[in-house]
Length: 363
Length: 200
Image (cartoon, rainbow over all chains, first blue to last red; front, side, top):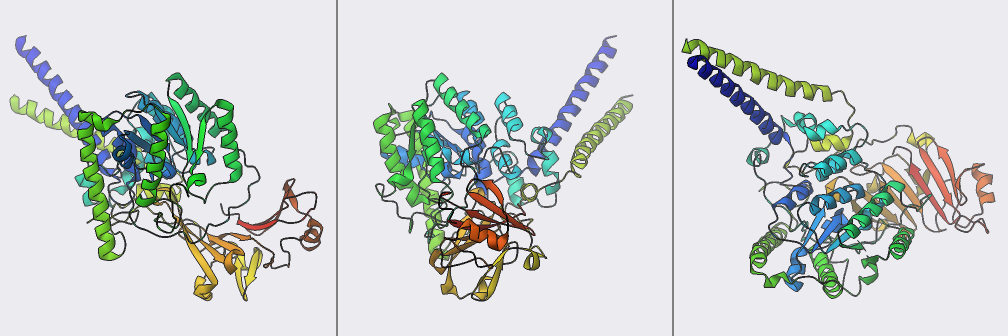
């Protein structure tokens, strides 16, 4: 009888071990096939990098490239002791900003949420490529489920987010050394969510924008702006609406819409295009792609300017005086300086960036 | 007896592994026939060493030259959905700006001719013309309409337009569209002229 019982236990244990092993293999293969975003288009790493943070943040940004390429949290810390993080991602849609804010609130409550209103221009998500970059790295929760459901474009399925191998299985013949190196761990690619570029490509002219039939923002986009506003209010968070000092890709009518919304709900909207001169922005040197995005020089000018505003208008902690936080930031600053110096060395050597940027090659 | 048990374990292991792999493969195969956009391909086939900029699925409309709207500059046609060969122009005749997108997902070019009198934009990662915009009255459409004309003059050339709003009027031709904007409906004068591709 005892012998039979032992056999049964052995069988059960063996079966469990085999099931676990199978799941482990499945997980491994899935991880292997997923893009790692460690070289080239690193923006797909940004969402998950937030979860590695060890310090609290008083200020958290949300938005697309207007957010993650325009503000340098490290510079804000160095200048003012502000602990800030950018939860931005490539063409982050405003519904995703909302769910990422909910996601943040699971672990911390910032004093200020800065929403880059650039993403109001898209009423609904339009490209799976961007959805993937924002959502694949999001930690599983009800918010991720809701974010996926709110983001699915035509042809996308929820299952392919739950089991990404459904989407990425055809990468099997394109796997690189990077894929194998980063199956289990990934390196940090951003600087508190900031995407650094040190190259310079002057803005030559600002193309005119096509006329639109209507300049109203879409109902869906406005719905999520409302949700963000209400969520901030519920949690005692100050919501600040901003626009980076990028002239192209926006309409004065859209500014008017945001101004009216801000006035209606007692919010502050800062259009930094209006303050470009005050902050000393010079698009001959402060952009790396002819004016579509700021480089590190532009982002640092904006960060010094905006950091001062934040410090003066909100009760923010100077984390330089908090040893545990300052210790973490010292590492962040060292990494920031390392990447900056590495980029500058490349630019000096080759006249351009070779291992950074979307067309980067691995060193 | 223990050998038999060990054999059984190996069989069970083999069966579970096979089911697991078959399941994954089946899931993958189920996904195969779904239509995919170029963006999805960018993601799924992204080579980490090559970056993520994908190839556009836009190509030149073979009938563009005959069927679409065009403008002519210095004897060279610039046709919507046709190819823009900038080598046909002297370098000092235009300025060009690379129009990057978020996260390197495509690079369009915007050409500014005659000091900004008109602009030509291409689809990302192609030389296919997606948009032309006339900004002042020093340039005219191929049919002779220019900024400052009245809508009556426009109608005399192109016929009755489709009104998209009280101040936006549209004409379609092939895979292209011409839009005329009348900023002040009271004076009825065209204030902006734009061509768009229908391929988006």
